[in-house]
Structures are given as structure tokens and as C-alpha cells.
Length: 323
Image (cartoon, rainbow, N blue to C red; front, top):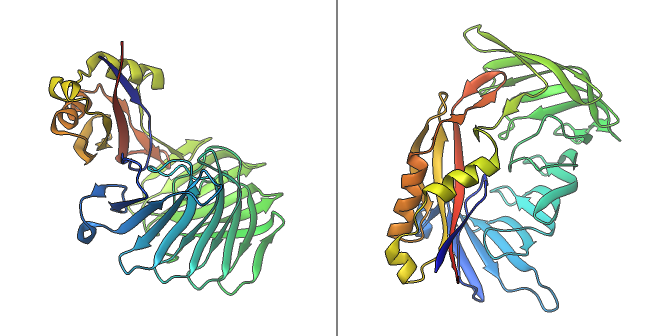
């Protein structure tokens, strides 16, 4: 046997499961898989494809047994969605309707207010944002106030974006043909920080953020950036390939699987708070943690022009192949 290690970056948790007629997973909101329902924030159930289909049925439920989401996936876990997916608020009202192709958000996504009224329609044209987030460069097709009055129609108007709990206005500005134009203003950190940005044909030109102490930061081209390994993804592959040793006990017992490591990229690029979110075996878990703890410094993430701590997850696939 020889070791073969595959690594991929991902912002959600990953679990491995043998294919059965039904697979049940208990998860925290941060993607952490837990061992029992009482510790979970929600439950994911993956069942066999319908007759004539190759897509698994994926249903998620809140602890109160109300639906969280329904969709179809080409994989058992993690979900690799295909076609329509519907998400729901804890109240049972519809939260969003989106479409996927090859596991990536595509086309229009329709979002709703907690009262059930339409809220926002955006078009996905590139790499999808994380769940429950709003990417500043996505075309805005339609936007409504909470009573149903249109603010943006056919990509034109003055839009208003709220935080995830709809407690304050997170962003507002003018869109033309779906693209931001001119001055955009908004707030962050529960409404305590305030920013102003200038856009041209949907592209961010420059921005300033003022926090609650009066400190001001300036940024251009991008509002936020994710932390990343120095060099590129290939360099990180090389680091893991050079440092990971497949544990002898697991190799001899043919134990394989994906271990998910959660961690924080600190402002100075160090990795901290490393923990196993989804275990495979004691040896594999320990080896993955060891290598991640010894990782060289990363380039930290930024938000509104300032360096920030960022929580991150990475799955590491331990698999064995014949020579």
C-alpha cells in the first residue's frame, strides 16, 4: 500500500458514511458534526434517490422538527447539490429558493423576509458566497421592503440589504442593470461600524470604514479577503504531502476517510484553536492535527481593510491505493 492524500478547502463540514438507505447526521451551525441529537443544532437526513434518478434526497430539520432545507445531491455527504434547493426559517416559513449545478449556486436566488414576503433576488454568476451571506458584487435583480413594496425592479432602483436577523440595514445604494453604481453606504458589527464605498458599473473602486472608536481604514477593489496559505493551493498540497505520514495502525487495518480540522487564522497568520470537527480514527485524527499545528504562517484575512481573525475548516482525505 502507498499513501495518497487529497486536500481541498471548504467552508462547511464534511462527513463520511457508508451508503445505506438512509444516513442521519447531527450538526452544529458552524458545520461541526456531533455524535448525538441533543448536542446538534440541526439534523440532516440523506435518503436513496427516487426511482429513475441518481440524486440523493437531502432534508435538514431544526431541533423543533421543522424543516430547515430540502434538496437533491449527487453525493451522500457532504451535499453536492443539484437543481432546486429550498431553505426555511425556524418558524417554517420559506427563507430562500436557489438553484445548483455541479454543487455550485447558479442563476437567480430568491430570498424572503421572516414574514414570508419576498425580500431579494440576486443572480449567481461565479463562485458562490457562503450560506446566509451577501457578496457585495452579486447582481441585484429585485429588492422589496418588508411590506412587499418594490425597491428594485429589473435590476434598477435603490436597494436595501439587512443583516441576517433583519435588525439593521447592512447596506444601501443604487443599482443600474443589476450593478452597483456610485455611493454605497452601510454598517457592520451589529450596526456599530459604518462604511462608504464608491462603485463603477458594479466594481468596487474604493471604500472607508469607521468603527465605534472613530478609527478609519481605507480599502480598494475588495471589501473582504479570506485567509490563505502562502504561495498557492499547490504549495499547500506540497506541504501536506511532504509532512503527513499515514499511521501504521490505520494503514494495516485499511482505515480510510476524511478528517475535518477546524481552526482560527490569527491576525499574525498563526493557526490556533485547532480541533477535529469530524473524526476518522485516533491515529488519522492525531496525524492531521499534528501537521496542521506545524503549518507555516498563513496570510490573514481582512474585512473592510483591517486584518481580522477568521474561523476556517479544512477536510483532509486519507485514502489507500494499491501499488
